[in-house]
Amino acid sequence: MAKILSVGCGDVGGELARRLAEAGHQVTGLKRNLPAVFNGIDYVAADITSSAQLQNLSTDFDTVFFILSPDGSVENSYRAVYETGLDNLLAHFANAKQSPRWFFTSSTSVYAQSQGEWVDEDSVAEPDKPNSRFIRAAERKIIAANPENIVVRFSGIYGEGREYLLRLARQTPAIQKNPPSFTNRIHREDCVEVLLFLFELQASGQVLQQCYLASDDDPAPSWNVMSWLAEQMGCSPPIEKTGDIGGMNKRCDNQRLKKLGYQFRYPSYKEGYLPLVRR
Image 1 (cartoon, rainbow, N blue to C red):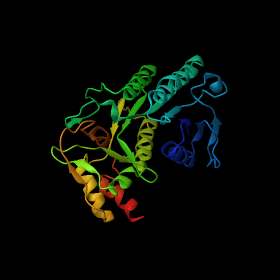
Image 2: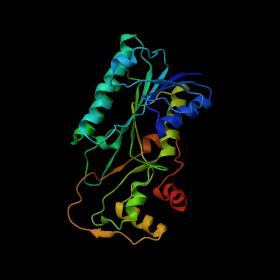
Image 3: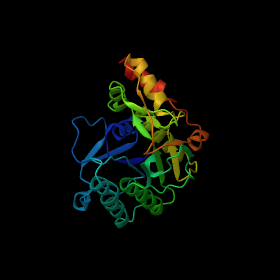
Image 4: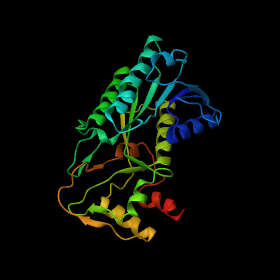
């Protein structure tokens, strides 16, 4: 069984660590504050933005999962995680002459495409927003550290505790209808399953590519999503918005992941949101 470090143990990282520990792996979770329940995980309390706090962290891991989110949307929060924190961790392993294989959770925000284009792992990823540039720079550092490291680009994560669209649908929002503004998403449970799936393939000896785009099968227009949610909840339909779309507008192609054999538990927003609506 593998010795695994999970950097970040929130709703995705924590569930992943729990599942790996249940499978018999030796799992260490790195968090700023220790949780109340350990679930078979050996937790270490440390802030990755402080190299001093990492001094006592073991380095003899087979695999590292980096699953962190910034504290906020300001530039300094992204720099703290994807520049300072990541640099400290990479240096910590390099100084010990250890090179575990990494799974780095990234974001489809690294794509600047905004005209409804299809994007995949080979599409140009040159983000125009500062926060996304930090993520893209971090991707490059991960691959440079070890060519066997893997970047997983998640689209918008939703699920229990991540119910922004449900709250928005209740407010009769103004939503672009024509031309359509496409959105991309992945259920929180599929995030965990994708990481487990790739980890198990790599552990079995299968050679994987350096980047995978993880988004469900249905990059649907915002109008369709919000109209359907409003109908399911018995709310007023959204108001049609006209003019410039603005912001991100792309369609994420998940075929590289699916060709490996992954099947989404929630292939579209309807399967994923319906249990949340009914609850």
